[in-house]
Image (cartoon, rainbow, N blue to C red; front, side, top):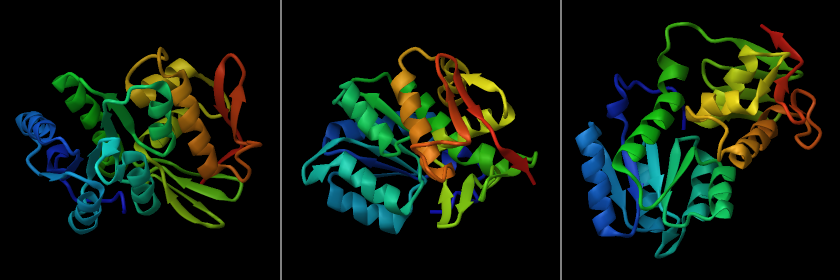
Length: 245
């Protein structure tokens, strides 16, 4: 799915809610509609979610982990294979390994049940805003630069490599933009977390590492031996080898 869309407002986003609990779907719908989201569709299982994802082309997905005919992680892999649409997990499974698994698969955020309505709407709006409006609608033109043979375009939120063109998730984009703004210099983990989560480092250390790893998989020729996105042990990360166009 292209990240270039013609929405005039964040509340124009069509949202797909995937959860088998009818009462939770009703509650989430009420929360979102009260916030201003009017284009909300629902799926109770994986099969229905696949059909709606294909035919309705939602701009955002809120996904449960435990579903009657499969699991949200597997469904996430299917969605991520064909689209960079923002995906937020909303799950009762709050173990760190599940949270990291969801984020490692490319989810933009992971919220555990029970949750505060305001937390859900704030984090959803943050994910959607980063995914669409700063990248697409911001008046100031963003830079295009190269890391070796890879061309990164911060206007479209994409990287073009010898094997194809790939779209960054909202979190990956936020991290890369912060690193580019400070190219050649060390960026602390705390600064990166504030850029991606509007928050400090507390509780996000492992999550940050997951997103850095996924970012390297897109911009590095050999992600296991990075030459551009470097770890500065004990301090943070640094983006080197940038060639502006």
